[in-house]
Amino acid sequence: MNEKNSLGLDKCFLETNEPFELFDKWYEAAKKKEINDPNALALATSSKNNVPSVRMVLLKDFSKNGFVFYTNLNSQKGNEIKENPSVSMCFHWKSLLRQVRINGKVTPVQNTVADKYYNSRAYESRIGAWASNQSSVLNNRQELINSIDKFKEKFNEKDNVPRPDHWSGWNLKPDSIEFWLDGENRIHERLKFLLNSDGSWKKVLLSP
Image (tube, rainbow, N blue to C red; front, side, top):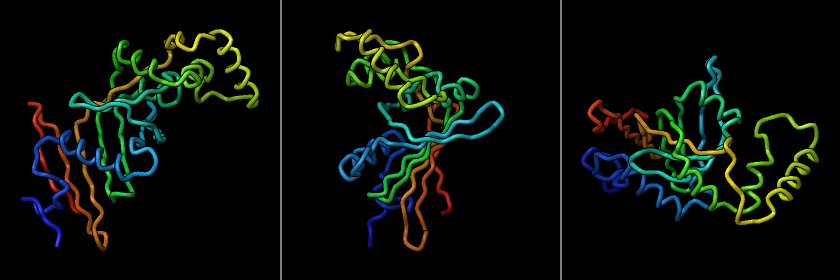
């Protein structure tokens, strides 16, 4: 029989009142077990008309201040975030039979933070940030290839490609984080952390 914590949950939920501590443990486990992109997450946004949209993005940093991802600010998700900063993230680690759902509001990262991450990317990725008008309609694929070639010619020094103003990062500061563990016969285990007004976290168990 699996060892349980004081809440009756599997020991992988730990004994902590800090969701970031628990996320860090689960994330490290995912890095060891998940074959492809353990930092992949589904990001849900909504337009000002409350039309939802979801896509996969990559987590690039996290701390007690929030969860960071990067994008073209003029993409669909970028424009929707400008209209409605309330977003939702979902990590699903099939190899661990675990899931994490995070809700909150996003704010832009500081320019120095965006610059540091941008400059760590491969040359081709930095060029792509310039060449692609993300989410816009292409007349044909060659149009994009031509744009890439144009910016490679403009920025031919691989160590000197400035970050475009339209490309940066967002930080999701959570107000709730839910941890989910697959259970037999769909009797899953769910632990949700809710942010209190004083900055502390309240833990609640959810029915599967």
